[in-house]
Image 1 (spheres, helix red, strand yellow):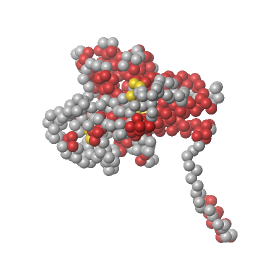
Image 2 (tube, helix red, strand yellow):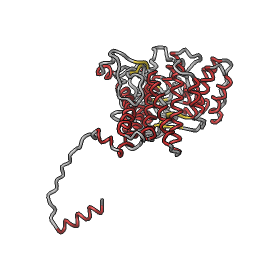
Image 3 (tube, helix red, strand yellow):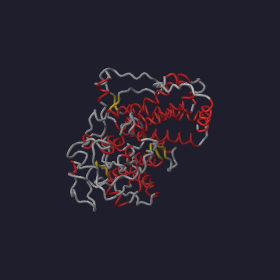
Image 4 (tube, helix red, strand yellow):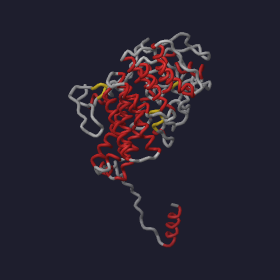
Length: 461
């Protein structure tokens, strides 16, 4: 650019420059037909991945705060200040978010689902029949469709879509109907299955593709565990997938970027002290647990600061002890891992009454972290240990609310992590428990369909 400018200036010394038109015409949105061009196909897949990250939590125009709100409702964090500007709305603080509050989250989560599913439909329409069944781009779109449907199923109360494979655009409901949230798990199962088949058919043997296949198997294992809890699939299906993700260190993540605020990890930015101090670990189970164990999975920091503003439910400003799982604006959020697979195997063992296997599976991770192993004397205590381990392992990953719901709805034995305040040596504001999942007010364990959907979709009551 410097060379070109020098040439223009030098030429101007010899000849008077002609009049220059500096008008700029905004071309507007990209025409849909342009996405049919092969050069645009990778962007379609990257867009699907970005939409998933937005739904989990970003401040983009199409972004939501599903991880953030779910963490607040399930007591993974406590509010520490503002209700706007990256704070926690009052209805979310009390555990009863309205359909109006959930508009952005509902919309962004469905954008995350629709984008890869529509991408698959586009690819099937325009790709040669010999290419579609083995295209790595198609396989990746299926993969992100799987995780997006899991996100919806684990966090929202109902579905507005029937059971269809992501290859179709015929999303039709009967007037006045809403489906079960488990329909999203079935859609996710189909998407992950298609992803595995397409990645395998590609014949690609790179490490990246191998990791994509592991991610699809891990994702499918997780939704099959969800389905199994509801009696809609055998636990053996989840076990088969989990066993194929034998690498405990395997991780698959949703990325974020420090390039612009609308691509930041929303949960981190809300507590980054630049200038937001909107949530804290003070008063949560994780505060006390980390004090005693120093388990790095649930690390939090202290700094002598107070939260943004007074919090009514706590009677004043509270200590700002932020989570330290996410430490930068670009910190990714884990979608699946080998460690989760070991806990799926442990849960399946408990379903079968095999406490010895369950203990061994849970302690693989704890041994790797040099932590004391879990102990229990009966099946109920074993279930409590399993629920606690999942709460710790999947902390702040938009997963805990779905776990609480499936266990509570299906009367799974054992206790679970709730909101009972654990007094700490550093704070005496509350000496007794102040809130649980059912007292003083019952909290929802899923989010409502967004109000915009109810007001604009004639098929939704």
